[in-house]
Amino acid sequence: MTELWTVEVDTSVCVGSGLCAANAPECFSLDTSGRARPPEAPVVAADEVLEAAENCPATAITLRKATGGEEIFVP
Ligand code: SF4
Image (tube, rainbow, N blue to C red; front, side, top):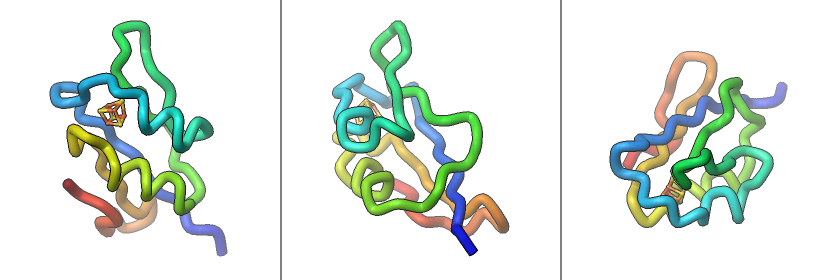
């Protein structure tokens, strides 16, 4: 069964680097203020999404399992 993750971005610390949108464009986009906007619905678990969270320079991205809420990546 495909694992789904919820994606959160702490926009109070996002510095608008755009790295997440560049590395996982199917998951992240930038809003008009240049801050990252996560998908509203859970996404399919993928290495590029995890790497985007790990490489965020502002440690703004949190990933959890959509079912049960288990932490995948919490900065
Ligand atoms: S990588 Fe981090 S700091 Fe850069 S736009 Fe994405 S959430 Fe914001």
